[in-house]
Length: 115
Length: 117
Image (cartoon, each protein chain N blue to C red):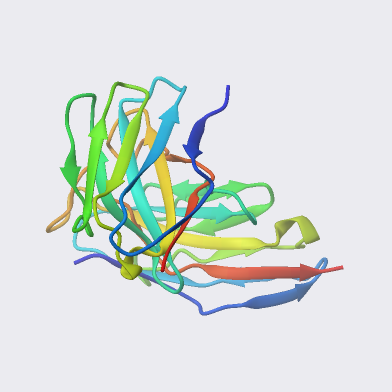
């Protein structure tokens, strides 16, 4: 039982390049999330998917797109990377979307640097 | 809107010292409160939570009490270990409040704790 897995662990991009961050969970959870973590900022929600087939914007969605490929997988795409997107990205999942009741489980993160 | 304020770090303690990390919140509804921990190189893990006023969350020797009158949820541990070295995040979920939603967790900025042997 691996929990939430993310690939890659590290990535360096040049400005304007594109890439997709992959996330998968094996806990049969309905809801999945993408966060970014910046120094001194805590975690901010980029996008979330309450259930398979649905996605919605979080606090900081600009410059990102997501795909809920199936119940297990939720990918985050940067179409044209910018230095402001240098961050650590975390994927999370929960049984249902009610955050006050259902624990969110986090992956180990992807450290992305855009030069 | 909702917000969480936690004490600035870093915090450096010796093993077996008493730990307090302060957390205060602003919310318009009836939030649930959480402490998450992030060990070096890992993702966040839920440490403890409290869903209503006067509830005490506890886990692994850590405790926090939901104080509505002071809008606080301070994290405490009586005797820290080197293995407690990590970043600690206070967070809230307030689906009933103005602008709240089911999915949203609002995080504080995090407090780095280092425990020396």
